[in-house]
Amino acid sequence: MVIILGLALIVSLTVTQTPLAKTYKWKIGHANAALDNSALHVTAMIFKELVEKYSNGQIQAEIYPSGQLGSDAEMADLVVSGAQEVFVTSLNLITNYAPRFRALILPYMFENNQNFRKAREALWIEFNDYLVKRANLRIAVLWDSGYRHVMSTKPVRTLDELRKMKFRVPPSPVMIKMVESWGISPTPVEWSELFNAVQLGVVDAFEVDDSVLISARMKEVVKFITDDDHILQVSIAVLSEEAYQKLPDDLKKAVDKAIVDTKPRVDDRSAGILKEARDISTKENGVQFLGRPTDYDEWAQKARTIWPDFYKDVGEGDAELGKQIIDKVFNAADK
Image (cartoon, rainbow, N blue to C red):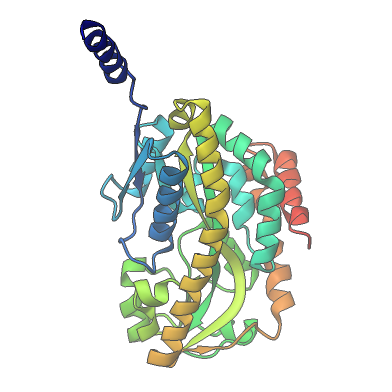
């Protein structure tokens, strides 16, 4: 009996001393509301689901929507420093830390989103390695969330028709130079004032992606949309390289698998969100989609003439390097 009790005690001690698997708490932040038609929030949910699944719960992610962790700029800094693990945002913001990515958001770089996806796959490793070295960030998700195009109160089928309108663009060097290449002087209006400006006729047209039809209620003031598709809206989820390197090898592999499997699900869901925005705008508000302008080639050719103005910026001071990067992206898209 003594021997049996002794063995039982040894077994008990062995069981109680087995170390539990270490868990890692991750914060995923973004600035949008926690809605099913927000591509940023949907992306955060898909990545959270797969990271937790493939890590068998050793990585536990909490989503903080609506800027709960700070402004976009603040969250970007937090992820670079490692204080926040994942940040979902527009690619434009991340170009402040990694200028080469500006090659992906030049006008008429991608004729359609399949061209973008070809370039994304071809250059994923190269761009990810650059982002890690340049900004201490890793690409978790990189996806297209619709084109920016012309929304207006009067039909726009040609550049000549747009030139007769008061056209608002955001205070972006790329946007301003693009519009100037079309022979247009943009009308300056703050985004927060744009809805009322369109209502009052201060602005006849502006450019943006379809998501704002619902999120900013633009379907209530817009009558026509011209699919000139000048810039593809590219969004990104970045992962802190510091957080990634803290993981053991098996969990790094789990995260790598989550990154691979998140991509097609986000691609599909983003397309669904955009289709929903267009369908609702047509059915509820009578918005008319005019398709491509009849002189589409002229829009594209003129806008592409501004690319050399950004060679030095993309090349981080080296214009020749910038040209090589932009040409590489363009060629990778299999034009």
